[in-house]
Length: 73
Image (cartoon, rainbow, N blue to C red; front, side):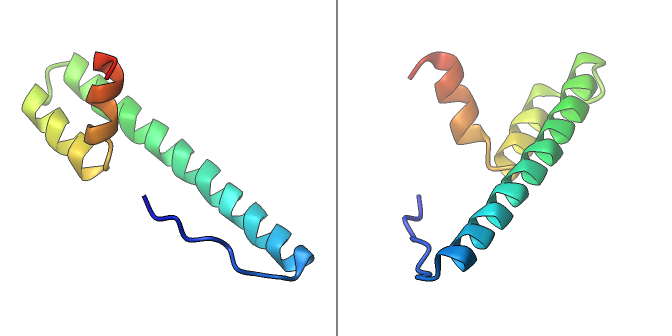
């Protein structure tokens, strides 16, 4: 994981950048939840295979997060 730090000394600017980052995270999370719902419905209704779901999870960057979490690793 990138450990880059926000290097802004002005507290007001730093706060605005942090708020912008948090807004981005929220919008990204909403988009990801939407994508997950679509993929889940496709899998549930046999419109895609498990292998295709794995490929989509990998494309979303979630594969390395999903299975270790589910497996309790």
